[in-house]
Image (tube, rainbow, N blue to C red; front, side, top):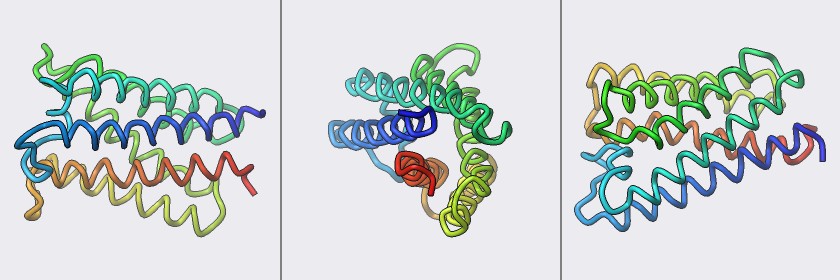
Length: 184
């Protein structure tokens, strides 16, 4: 198996297991609200082992995929993928309440570079998928700006945070599938 296809499997597997673990964690958290609660609220309390291990796995697989893509794709894209993965690892290692704002820093790294990776992947895919990737990346980055400014547009902080994360997860599934399919 070539490096590019392996990278696709890693991105796809990491993303799928994270989505499933996040949904399980939400279901196991009585009173949890996607409107009011941050995604990272799942990383403290009873669901911490599920959520934190899952996001660490996501980060490790994504960062490894980015490293495998070095030389096969443009450097700004691969560096963004690696940094998004490193950020996700940090989110899991330093849950909410960690000292020195480490959780917030790693969350920002993940959000920013995940959106940039989707945006930067535009030229690495067929036109339709590339355009969809650019839209998803731009939506994630625009949502990050709104979120940082506390403009939640009726979605609440949890809902707006998901408007950062969900487009990147959708992109990762599509892009991973594209790489697995052999980049035609």
